[in-house]
Image (tube, rainbow, N blue to C red; front, side, top):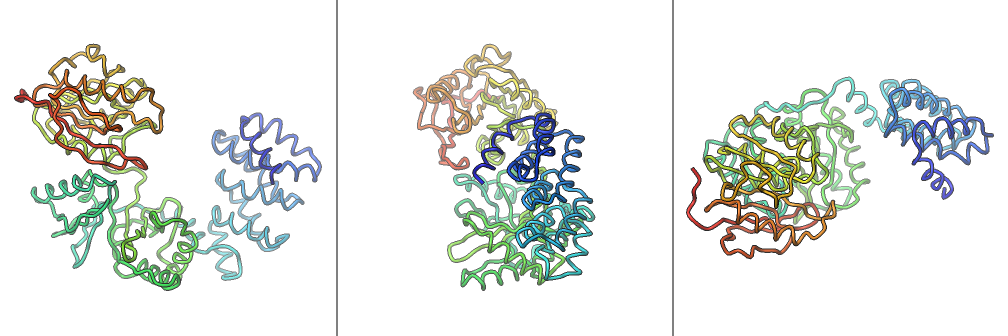
Length: 517
């Protein structure tokens, strides 16, 4: 195994052409013993071709792997079958694997074949599993999900109306420190005729109810929460087997089936997830299998399921919640591309809410990245002019693209590749011209930032220059650095989790009479 891993590390650095023309050719010409010793070639081909191969190269690799399924060496066959799912599988490969499943060389090969068929098996595998029910090492639920994923794909019914049945609760989850902002948005929504009401506020959690019918679209008019879960039930944590039975009963309850049927076009598929509860793979598998036995129409599916059923640890047990899963978040309709160190979108929305809605706003993001803070601020309304600067030409290009996709016709936008300290290079970004600075500056976590302390100190200095009297600065402060100029007065500070580390979300106001018109 050590030799296999060392050879694999060497081979995976090669290009597709180099692997195919040199290593695969050498492998094919080798003796049976040498092929076994160089089985890492198979693994390398699957990884490299999956990542960078052309369609023609992938097709050739699949054909080669299918041929290796007939190799006399069990190790070569096992490596080939394990490699196939990475390249998408093939009906011919499925037929060969089914034949191997019925006459494997040993139990290990039988288990390996079963594991691969669970990933690439289709209708033929399903028919075989049903015919030999209970005797093959293949999970029927996974194969059925594979088939329905293609034959009856699922989408969310965003406009279906949910009746406010007794006891129905929604859990709006957010990062630590943003709870009050999320709750305030819900309360404001209610004051403008919205149907949602805050029931309870906890750590990273806002519990809400509805006083009238609502849809998923209605929920996603709220922009500050991270995820939403329809509460299906709560469980105590007795002995493991009792917990699994209770969880399976909740997954298949009339309440859960009602929501899944109402809100799903196509096959009903979910992914069972335990949130922040350590390694629960065995419990997830056992609970999903038990749920399938109780209700085969509801399938646990790890791939492209439109729903997650989340199990959150609570003080005295667990909360079971139905969470929509999106290929593309509907609130981020404008995000065409992103950058590596982009903001957490709900944080950008929370920052915009902290800034408030002011008529004829002139807003500047000194580190605009992909433009989220500027766009979220403009979506709230009142923004006349938006400026975005960044040192990265790529970020500026992406921010321009995203801003255009947001279709904010009442807001004029100017993006410039410039150092935030060089405001004179940006037409219109003059002293005293800005009413709002909103920014999530470099944090120095994912991308190293030399002299971050000086950057934050300089940001405060520039803010005092460009802000008009009464203007605000809303930003995520990664350091315990405060302005030296007393004209910037702190109005708000909250410690916020930015995904594994804390920063301080702060609001400063430049003292003096406002000149915003």
